[in-house]
Length: 607
Ligand SMILES: Nc1ncnc2c1ncn2[C@@H]1O[C@H](COP(=O)(O)OP(=O)(O)OP(=O)(O)O)[C@@H](O)[C@H]1O
Image (cartoon, rainbow, N blue to C red; front, side, top):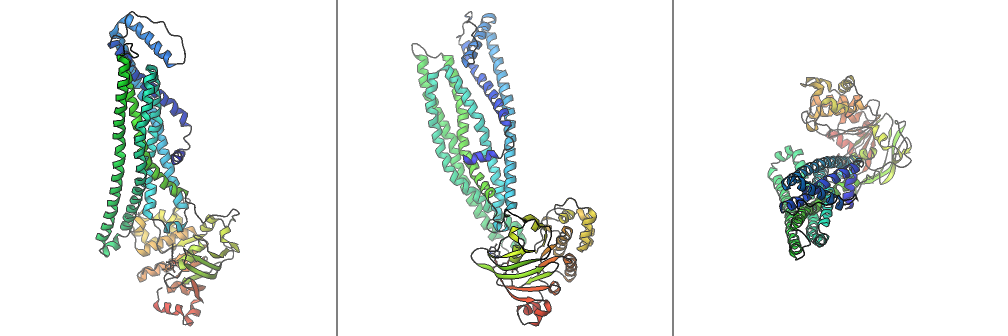
């Protein structure tokens, strides 16, 4: 239930619509009740229970249903006396049509309000989940499955909409009707109503047992869905490799297995969920029969406590009570699914990043002097991947990291971006610990050109500006020119407005890289992290990318994870990183003169 209230909390700022809703639903209820209750006088007229000529005294006013009833009968008697039974019938029918019209009008208006609430809840919930994803640490994503995260933001939120939020509709509408109907039932026969009141909860209990079972299955179903999404995502992303390895049948088998598990679990849920309705229906009819027996006795006794018309009216109204009661019981079983999905979404929403700003955060505008790693060690889990690292990147200089794969180069770059904090030692920027700096300001000073260019299914211009709106077309073009990208862009059919496909898959590797370089040039960050691409480009492409990189690195403080000899030759210091430690350091010429790892690597030319 706590989760349910929390879901409703996402309706903010729609709180002020509550009174509006209450008024509308009350009116809808009143007219629905009038509509059904009109049946009793109708039957009385038909059964000749309202005798013509019999006049009653006009009742004196009071705030009770009894007053309304008496007033109605006063006018009914009058109508029968003056115009005859048939006209009375005619008036009652008019009353029924008018009341059903009004009831439905108010119900429609109240449902519009609920629809607004529903839409708002889902909108806010989805945004909150996405916000949590964008706020999460980089490390968060290595321990989570992408498909599972996607399914939390998409299908879990949808599940909340379909069940929990729809349940809201029933839960705030039907109780009003039940109360309204019971009020009338009480005025017809308090005794009979009391009997029925003791029986209704029995029916409810049976349904709640079913509801509890459903929870268990619901969580598993959503988890299976996440698993399926993961496989789907991996397959689409890696379709080239899957085909090249002829692994289609392997991946299909995996997917088929997951789909089967999902199907089995959702069938289990349906088995239980569909039980709710028959159980409540059978219980409903059982309760109705008991009422028939007790009420029948009251009508048939020598001194009837109820007239036949009242009894039929009672039964009709009581059968209507069962409709909302049944709806509520079904909702209780459905709501469980929504609650499970909601708790999966809230898990995500509640995840707190570990990398946060300290209370006394210091602002940073630019790099003045240097970045210093002092005794830095780092472990992702148990195993240390960086050990006692000392290095200085002076302002305006290029420091290159080289070394065998898995040595820890990317981890050093991640530490510099503060995607992770060192487990030991410190990183200082102009003498200030990185952990004390305003995080977003610091990251804003860093331009990251990575091995896997992040490109979106959007135009070239938008991929270069990357969310910055204040940039003119001339600036975009200038950046593209500096990155050696202008020539190929101009040749494209729509130039800068060409859509480049998902992850830029309509461009070549070299073109993609130059586009991200153009983006970095436009961003103009004082610090640059360059994770060079290992993928081999042809000589011409390589030359163009290289030139673009030199333009980019000019006058910037650069940490480069180097894979090309040409970049390294210009580095002010080269650090050879092996198994998390610096094993050699110096300039290209100095290191080449030694007979260490660096010399071996240069002989391979690419590393
Ligand atoms: N998210 C992670 N969780 C756990 N271990 C990780 C994670 N990322 C990297 N590692 C491990 O840390 C070590 C260093 O990895 P890193 O990516 O920094 O190496 P690298 O020198 O950049 O390699 P490459 O040149 O192949 O990109 C490796 O042993 C790797 O398996």
